[in-house]
Length: 81
Image: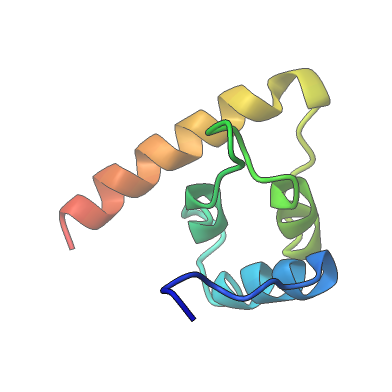
């Protein structure tokens, strides 16, 4: 291997992202927000992770704005830990 991560089926990717945020408090942003697509937009599984963890549904047209706010909140939160 040349330092690259092995291919993971999207089902496995989703499961890993959900597990990573399983203990994230409901009032904190999801760590999965830090995983992006190739074009630096929310990962295609971000909505799935939110749904799987019982987070509030976000309309499609508001998803990217919500995601950007989550990323900002994460940076602010972890900067002071």
